Image (cartoon, rainbow, N blue to C red):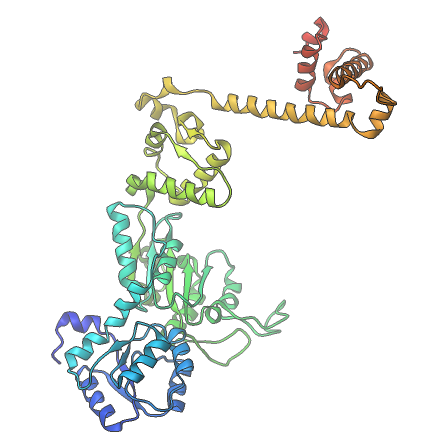
Length: 502
């Protein structure tokens, strides 16, 4: 074989389907495939092509010559969905190639027959690159640090292939976001992305969640139900916290990964599956293997292409970009935009971030509620993010204000305004109005003075009934005590007895 080592590594196809009505030309194409160490499968009829499409073991490549009886709609749908990740080469007439491209899309690679093995070898690697160019914008992890640039590069490199991916990293570093990026950048992006947290589901229920169950297979199984493998057919299955999976379940998962066959709980009929596996964990699986908590053979099945997600503290330079990203999300969800002052960013950059990016996202959401539409300064941050020793080290102690007390005062003023509005509205209710004013005088009435008089008289009656105790009078008037005190000041009714309660 004339392929060099680099080409041999990138050419991972073992078999190719040749769909051509010309048996002589098909055999010559097969000879070229054999030179590339590929096993050809020759097909000359649409019924055989339909059988190939429907088989659980998808062909790794398809070469199309001239066919007279092809159902282009069916073939196009299959190549876009079930066979979305295989290279397609058209080497027949221009008319057939045009129909194939119209049905499948630009991932089809045109070749002129006859061709050399080097040309065909290159063509069978082109579709993955073409698919990558068709992807468009994929939500990659936010950041410009070297660590995140490496993660983004690895995601783009592995996305076009069906290799299993193991994403490692601390909790909250964005492992599921990376898994979704791999899926969205892959040829499977139009098929489902299904996530399951292996650590959040009891061991006795995880098998049913993954593989499904039949009606009556266990107590509570009132109907047959598909598992995550069936739901993710043709797409990607994300096994989060794989390190928390029980050993018996690891054995069953290993069998599925090896044979691509599983059985529903309560049924012994094997079901073929075509899913890409992405797993993630915050645990050190090699240590778990040494302790006997994780199977070594399963580890090597999953760890084909590892991606390490960096912690936030190791890429703290990404903090401003992450803050802007989370702020934009809050705005999109109807909350206020958050803008941190340089001092606040400086303080946050010294925090250890044990919860990583997830913790930062929660903080920004909290600040969008507490500090809407204003600059967030150091004093607005929760205490754990601004310890006194850090503020002293950064010489920020003298620059702090007391936003908590200010916020409480603003909230109390707002509540008092609401109470006063409710009080006025209740006075204007028909039943109260009938007692206070039987008829509107012909010349009209000064409503403000009238309400002033009514309110003052009612407060005076409440104080008299409560024996001068402001708190009791406030309860009679359904007011907050502080609200009644303000009204007493307004009406100049704050006598010595009431003032002694303040």
